[in-house]
Image 1 (cartoon, helix red, strand yellow):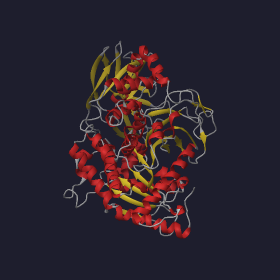
Image 2: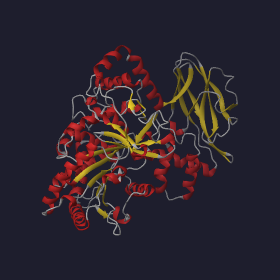
Image 3: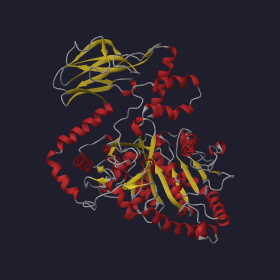
Image 4: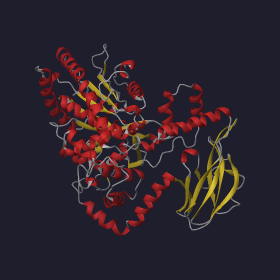
Length: 630
């Protein structure tokens, strides 16, 4: 998706530079109302600062009879010395209302620019004409269908799900940024396992205060990241250093791997064997429609809303979690409290972000089996209460926990990216300053630059308090990969005191360096410790070590990008394979084995460097005392 949108943006930039208009094309407008409506396309200035600014009609007015469709010519974008103009479809009940010039906000309208597709809809919403593009129409009709069809099932569904382990338990907001006592207890037990593993692998005795805290950090990237993470975990388990990890931080695709694996209780190899049979068809195929419908009805029964993320998460659960449970929609993040054991697994950290008022200022949200919290909000809530309505720090309802599928939908909601974020992601990879300047002019001045496709919105747990963001009734949660494809923020927190971070970066299209340098930039912005990065070494080696020789308290980073290896499958390059594209949701068993085998070998090849870093850290702690925060 990003690649094609980028190409369109480059075409627009070129047209702007040459002061040209793109060739017109045709759009289809469906009138879903029971009355005839009139429609016309208008050029709208993208920087609308005054209510007196006028939209300029292109062509004639089109009559669209009730319950019918019409094709309308979509003109190219207009570029003039006075500024940039986009195209909106204005809708009215009379032809006369659609004058040659209109006040911009005078009538219902929908943006029909090229990035919005070729199909648009008109419906009557609460007595008002409303326009939709194809994606917003799916979300709207999904909610409408569930609402309309649920009346006779609503009571039954509420009754079925009202009896849950936390049905009589009030949740309270926990203030502060310190770690949950449950997490601290978990890590204390996990460090016992880490100590034994160090002593076994290094054939030495390790003092309690010299045990290193090692974290695994795995990237986003859809199924590619999920499968790459599975392969790496198999290699780490084969080599024996999997039990060196205290934490596993994941986002987007790698969080799909971690979420299912933690629930399964299986080894990475056995989990992949069972999962592989479900990946041969897209997540849109071979689903239990009754289970999906039931999951959506449950969401509507308790929240009175169903979004595109609910549907997306339900389909992901059907495809990725059936290996874990007969009805994957019954799985919740809070259930991992009983299933995750320190003696078997690192502590799981799943990541999402909040975009504060569509400003591009992101706050990272941490999901663990015990809590969901945001350091910027200086607060957290029990994981089973995430999504409940809070006021003045206490829950106002006793709704059941959100499903793990819904959480996976949030973690992997890359479709919620907006045009401004695409520009930020790609501008460092384009060498032409002229193109960049035109892209900036188009996107940053665009009326659609911050719009998202129905992202997940969750009740704000700080509402009614004096905690940060307390003024927002809802929080917009999106894929953390939109900010950075590597989930460093949770493991850079001083409270966790990480000594070594092993990074598996499954980014494609040679984007590894972008994610790593963005992580370093984040650390600088927040005053967090991060070692200098040798960029040449990071992008040319299967495994590279980065440390700060002047400051022993800076964590060591061991970086493993998704690179071809001369000794693996005759130098097979994952960046050149079509099936490793981020939007591919179908893998044959051969493709899955090929990709996971590559990262499994990378994990094995990294063994010596990882053990050397661990040994060095132990010596440093033994000689100079622990620098880890308790």
